[in-house]
Length: 230
Length: 230
DNA sequence: CGCCCCGTTGAGGGAGCTCAAAACGAGTGG
DNA sequence: CCACTCGTTTTGAGCTCCCTCAACGGGGCG
Image 1 (spheres, chains in turn blue, purple, brown, red):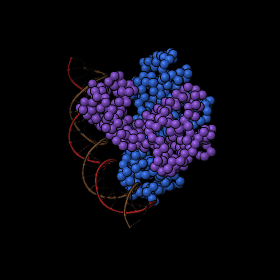
Image 2 (cartoon, helix red, strand yellow):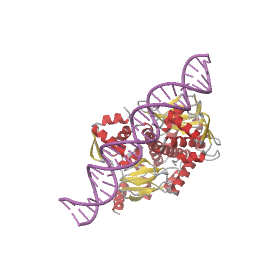
Image 3 (cartoon, protein in one colour):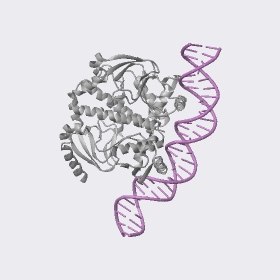
Image 4 (spheres, each protein chain N blue to C red):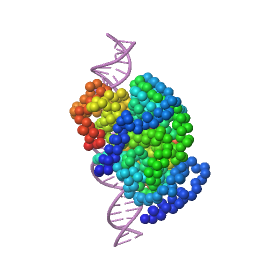
């Protein structure tokens, strides 16, 4: 693979001292570069899949990478394109939450994640808490991007109801503190569509609406199926 | 795909409300509680606006808050609803990137952000770098949520082209390393729509297409107007 | 009681999707 | 140098899902 040679050359370049005035985040990771390894990925190949154990995070040296999430039926949402100097692949979960595929021949640096974990052990607890919170927020918004980019109105509402149930439901009940307008603006729909979908979910026997903001789950499994697009 | 199922389980685990005795992030901030102040916000009132100087971050005690971003013509995207024990209002920028409004009468704790800054000064550089990277990724994905939730096809493509130009353009040129399919899956559109919009932008004299992946900007201002929805 | 806000329902229209085919460009082999 | 193939992009025609506009209903509150 000629790409590997390219990547190693890039690594050599990286380990030279950087210009002093550079405020690039890349610089801050220089201390980790000794443990880093060069990786080359050919055009179209996958660096890692959604669900793989997350052993490394990466920095792009040259080329470009796309991060994808898939729905079961193949609908795809690309969260980001990573270009030279971009970092990706960290997050609180111990598996990757998206796949990463090279869209052209790409050279990367891989940093073992345990370096990070080790370094963070020495940090104040609230710093780790902060990272956890942010990384969690990140996975939430990525989920939301799949919803907004690729799900139908029914799937969006089903996803929303289940999500609210997990966050503040009690048994098979949820009280929705927000108006239809808020739900619509959260799901990228209109008030009317939200209302119509809720009516349909009730007609289909998936939920019951005691009051307009009081949802009871009747067939949670079917709702979950719907939310994931089946 | 067992991997995908594993990933989804991880996501579910991350999103599940944490048991009270666990390492709840809220606990980790107990050390800051001495400097925290209680805040009450009435139903419908705004806690802060997009662009306000970011002096505090918050934790919800009771009630609920929505975080919004607006397009100039009033289209609204709600990024998140914050429920009891949720944190919000941090990020690298020194102004808030979204507004926060109480959707019911809400009680919060406000932590001065300078506490955070001070505490982070003592941390390893790469920890701060990591926080910067994550916080930046967060603002990017929130931008993308507005795009996916509320922008038209033309606005999406215009936004995308300008974004790529900032990241890897040279003068009035950008080379797009990805296919139409990738662009489509990033913008929540289809290949055909992306292609049609590019053709239209060329016909309208906003861009030129030397090759299918080689864009030249002719009227960048008009493109920027379009991207923001005017 | 009357007002207002919120939610629901209905009818029609349009932005973007689907399906299909043609044009194009890069690579390959004769 | 041309012919052929394969993948990508463009263009066309028709359709659908969701939006828009409009009317109606209901609950909370002065």
